Amino acid sequence: MMAVLLILAMGAGAAENQQQREHKGLLWSSFHGLDYEFKAGVNIGGTSPLPLPQEIRKIDGYRPGLAITIEGNATKWLDEKQKWGISVGIRLDSKSMETDATVKNYGMEIFNEAGGKTGGLWTGGVRTNVRLSCLAFPILATCQVSDRWRVSAGPYLSYMMNGDFSGHVYEGHLRTPDATGSRVDFSGDHVATYDFSDELRRFQWGLQVGGSWKAYKHLTVHADLTWGLNDVFQKDFDTISFAMYPIYLNFGFGYTF
Image (tube, rainbow, N blue to C red):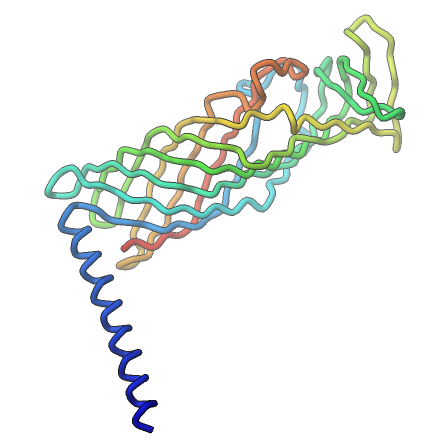
């Protein structure tokens, strides 16, 4: 019995010491003008050319995918009133969408029946699936507008860990190798697939702007717009003749400490 009581006492003492260390750590951070935040949310948006090129005649459908984000960041305040600061973070970022479009003379490379690829200009319907899993590093200037509102803006760097850019074409025709070449028609259930995943760029960068509202002492609600500034495809990829940029709105909840 005495041994059990001794073990319980030792466990309680260890827990109390851990709490004291954590409390001292937070006090140290606060004294040095540092605070931390853990955020979780979802991305809604798309990977798109801007402006829409003449090859894309109409967007027939858009479906966002489930794109969850998890982020941890730290803010260093630069003044005693803690109004201006610099925030750095690391974010596990996922981006997903599916679109249907009607296009004309759209650069395309499809898989043929023999298992090879045929390139040319496509006119008709195109379904595109985009899924990106990235590790992003935002570096933001932060302003504490009021006790509850905080805004931030700055660049982000991103490394794509996994990427998928694929789909199929339908109800149209392919002219190869150019607009005056031979024509192959697709109609009804006759479709052809394509996959440009291997042509995606690993390193991406862009701008982020957003804000957060403190709902309770530690709970925040945030919304952040991320806008990619370099093409998602590699520089030497020329099947698609225009650049495409990831543009997504992230919203969710955070916990500050």
